[in-house]
Amino acid sequence: MLVIGAGGAGLYAALTAAREGASVILVAATPLAETASYWAQGGLAAALAADDSPDIHRADTEAAGRGAVRRSAANVLVREAPHAVDDLERLGVRFDADRRGRMALSLEGGHTRRRVAHAGGSATGRRVVRQLSAVVAEDPRITILEPARAAAIWTSDGRCVGAVLEDGRAIQARATILSTGGAAAMWARTTNPPGSLGIGMLLAHAAGAALADLEFVQFHPTAVTGIPGREGFLVTEAIRGEGATLHDATGERFVEELAPRDEVSRAVHAKMREQGTASVELDMRSVDMAKFPNVVGALRESGLDPATTRIPVAPAAHYVMGGIVADLDGATTIPGLYAVGESSCTGLHGANRLASNSLSECFVWGRRAALAGLKEVQPTAVPSAPPAAAPILRPSRATQEALWVDAGIERTREGLERLLDDPHPLARLVARCALLREETRGSHRRRDFPELDPALDGRHAIVRGELDPVAEPWS
Image (cartoon, rainbow, N blue to C red):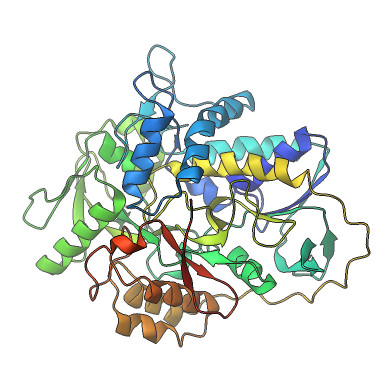
């Protein structure tokens, strides 16, 4: 099996396959434990508390997703996430506990129960990825290629048979799993590391796989702004769950801090525009600083002490709900090719991801894709020659600024049509999906179509090749 990408989803997929006795090649663009998952401050959402249930978790997921969540995908997540947490503990991940030694669960925006498991407070991604990386590095059935990048998907007779790396190496496999992360670094202001450029999405698209929902881009409401060296640094939502509040230029609170992210981001954006400011202020002085050591440490290193000072924050591109179309096992529209994590789109997140569902998604679908991939039949025919390695397309600063302006928190037809002429293919794909959705829904806000269109409930913008996107229902 070939796994491309070594974030949480890729590491767990590789481990799952190896534990089933398979030989795995893991392609990592950066050294292990330096992926986007490493920086994840959120935790794993799972119905673990006595007053919680998978059905309540699903209801919260659907409410946040604004009528666009694929119920079958939500059911998979909420029923399997508790098992993922248990397995991570068996693999050595130590989740935070309360004074009685029970797992400490936090409350985040859009959740009606405390159900988010953390490791090291806001250092969950770091703790989980470090531990999984250590386990992967010790497994003799997993060969790690680092640093290495996939530059083309290898297909033969309409089936994926492997991939070609940047250096020209062709790797053949009976199943290939893409876990290359998201695309939020395509936007000028982002919480993501620089490599989150949708590379896997473009590789899959070039190979003929369908993409979906690229118009749904979540903007996190509390990213640090105006501080050199910390621009875009994410202040986790869990801090608001512990009592932090948002204030405008007059010092007044103006939003329900634990509303879903689309509501809070729009409220912050509107307040900044109304008052002509570049930020609002996050007041976390009443929060127990010991619960969030990496956030507090980073802020203090930049000269801000959150114990005594309000922190300037503003929205930033954080998560693309869309990606490579994948079914409930992560299978794409190309046989033999799977996609998991933020590079995929199962319809789980709908129009607005519920906080901390994404890390849970990585482990639930990482496992499902690995097990499904192991059932693929090894091709007997000699595959066609591998394709040439294509150069990795990186956006110019002009493209990033154009996406921020024309496909940011608010959009118009005029701005989206400008993006159709952008030199970067992913920017054009985002614009094509956004133009199809003539409504405001979740993270997608059109100034020229300010209302939600009930006719688009449950429909997803699907892109196949250069064909015009179509709105398709998913169940």
